[in-house]
Length: 192
Image (cartoon, rainbow, N blue to C red; front, side, top):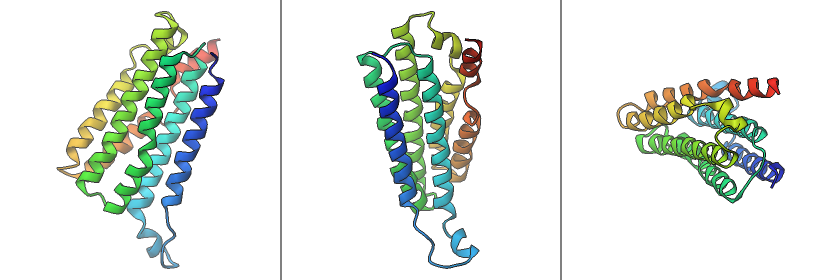
């Protein structure tokens, strides 16, 4: 099976997730900058989540460009990734409503961590199905950045109970690491 249906389905799910998140943002009561500032935590959580989901979408797209065919295992692992990504709007809303309370901050981090693990599993499933010398395998190598992201999110979960602001800083740090589309795949696509 070719990747087009998988890409279209995933794009649709991700578009819905972003829509759900923006619908959670309510307009402030007042009409001045102070009213907007009152949404600081909610707006910050939304921006972070939008960027992270956008990063997943972009890297997912690049990964599928390197995928020649799709099998049942890839379909299920893609659904596994979409499941964890679908929890991010809930985590975003709870994080924003709680004003960075420890349990919502840790829960949000768990959703990010499990999304990272699911992405790594999907990548490994694609590599396994395409063979040891697949285009994707040669482009991503050992995926140190992906593993580091999962570890950083796990550390941030622990910090949520010490200082939630440190957790937020780590979540933003992970997003900054991935803000530019994966250059390994970009380089491989340019060579081809």
